[in-house]
Amino acid sequence: MPLFELDHIHFAYPGHAPILRGAGLTLEAGQRLAITGANGAGKSTLLRIMVGLLVPDRGTVAAFGQVRRAEADFHEVRRRAGLVFQDPDDQLFCPTVTEDIAFGPLNLGKSRDEALAIAEDVLTRLDLTHLRERVTYKLSGGEKRLVTLATVLAMEPEVLLLDEPTNALDEDNAARLVEILTALPQAMVLVSHDTRFRAQIAPDSLRLNEGRLCPETG
Image (cartoon, rainbow, N blue to C red; front, side, top):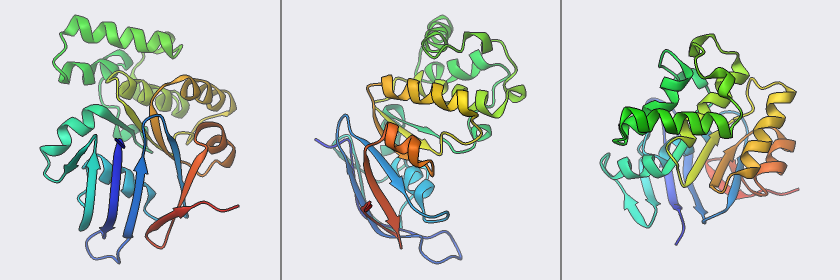
């Protein structure tokens, strides 16, 4: 059973021409799929539709074996598919790194002690324990990017949706991100302009062009 099936997705932002015009994709368990395309092609929009943050004008979103339509349908999807936003500041809002990472588990009903233990475990696995008490908004861009990934991994998702994860990363942090992602078991959908990074993380590739997804060529 596919993890996600998007069929004939159409979407337009109010007052603008359609950005998606029949886009479709299938994500299988264990698959790592890159989505390429020009700036403004609708790649980030597609990721947001997958987790119900945007509602398509037409088309079907099926996730984990069920068609998802209403907002309530996507609550489970967001527990099982973690979206790492393009801008970390859209995702980090607690005073410290540990609190940001513990926030998701707390929302899932974990006790404070359980949530803090999960946060410590994720920080240890990602070699980020030196950041645990840092004030989030004072982190560097690269540090924020890695902490954002940690907040998503704390939810133990089955799928990772990654929107330009190498933005603001220097060479060392980009290499660390590759090391982290290649070691993870989750299926992934990756949006990235970084050709080398895509090749390392997501061997399967689709290109979003004129509102539709088609196999990447050459």
